[in-house]
Amino acid sequence: MKIDILSLFPGMFDGFLNESIIKRAIDEKLVEINVINFRDYSHLSNKQVDDTIYGGGAGMLLRCEPIFECIDDIRTPDAKIILLTPDGITYKQSVAKELASIKHLIIICGHYEGFDERIRTLADYEISIGDYILTGGEIPAMAISDSIIRLLPGVINKDSLASESFEDNLLDYPSYTKPQEYRGMKVPDVLLSGNHAKIDEWRKLEREKKTRERRPDIGK
Image (spheres, one colour):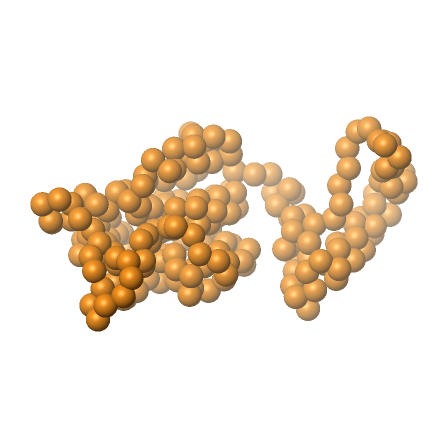
């Protein structure tokens, strides 16, 4: 998979690309990630990429030319374009799975007051990571990229993925490790029993209970 991220602040991605599972996936060539400063596509002498709003209003909007020309330069026949915007669809694990099957993703990070409305015509997906406002699209781009990359073959053990939260519209079951007892809190006896059928049944029931209590909206 190839992921191209359009951002005015590529330095924000340094830690993301150089640590943990993402770095390993890049090193093992399971994913290619490029962060592109679309300011480089501005034709203005000062490399300006934003301007005042027609009709008035506070703040500055991203101009459409640098975004369009950057997309023209990097788009491939397999590419799908994601526009990060507060009024996009709310991001979910089901969307991550869909995106993980795409060979080339281009993610556009907005900034400032927003973007020229014509930029929407480029998007195959408009995505929001939640009902709140951030200063730009860089953090959402990292979150979405992380959720996709970990689903790619070879990045994470398949068995680990199969039992995670949001599989089958259920949250994950409680898990424990050593010591067996700490400050009066004990590991449930069933997990120490060695009876895998009973353990599987306990975990299933715990997933259902946890989902009912904490996220009844996804358990419907």
